[in-house]
Image 1 (cartoon, rainbow, N blue to C red):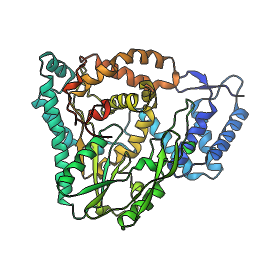
Image 2 (image 1 turned 120 degrees about the vertical axis):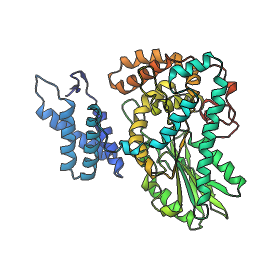
Image 3 (image 1 turned 180 degrees about the horizontal axis):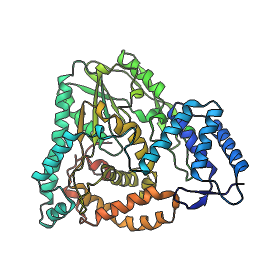
Image 4 (image 1 turned 30 degrees about the vertical axis):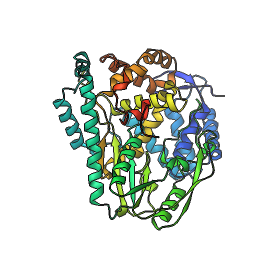
Length: 443
């Protein structure tokens, strides 16, 4: 029996059969398969071959296991799954070498938006963590809040201006972007402006189209990877989109997040006069999400926290770290999910973002920058005291290297700024309220 495996860095760690099955299943799901039993059979093949090759002087290494997974998939006739597995493996090899991803490149970066954000930061003396600390020290934090909120509202107004230029042809507005970028608040603001102009947004809640939790892959820690577009019943949602655009009524399913199952119907939905269908989804720009509808009737909006703030090492604060902090607060307050669980799950979030979300940014008609230059001191107040503990805990878990690197980086960032405790200064319609609570909007 194989009980140990050698990692790439030479460490010997416990061998976990479930990790092989999960990797195979994730590759299968990415190409439309969901059969766990088949993944288990391929795992059996891999382990049988490992045991036949095992040397008494050595344990198998990670590369050997992955080579055998590819071999067994191909031999069993699962060529598409094998290809997806090979691509995923190659992506990770590029990441370890610090090289450019196959799916995420500099071509995806909205440089014009970054220049505008940087220009705004220069004008308001907040292009570094040190400058933000100085603003607080000089009692100008409320001024920064007001300026930041104005910046974000101008972004929303510009998006609506473009929508109105095409309003006669638009049947669907898609609001997409990575986790915790502020899609929901942006959606509400756009909805309210369009309502004043005589148009109504009718929401199709994509969350109701999730597959049952029993059909989602679960890792050895009991965590589910529900971040990919394949976690959603794409065939059903496309059929419903096509019917809605054609003027038909569709029965929208109801997904019960407490039980993890689709249970009955949430509503009968149809589009009336001057009504536009709204899709607010992580994966709104993923082609297969809306392939049943022609592009000519879609308006695609992308939301991201395009921070242009640097730390004392002259390194930009990562957009994904800003969003992770937002999600930690939101999960803790509204989803009964601990901050540590959010960090541990974040590698699934990032993997899906880079493959299915960020890589499609250029498909958007407009990008909204939802970063607020004042939000990091608020997050430090909410979360800063947790990170030293997280660092020590993740150091003891060899499989949590990704989480460890994130909490170490955020901890260093927090060390450069003071915490801000008084949240009453944050406007009730701020995008930040989506995460910290106290919003006038209903989410």
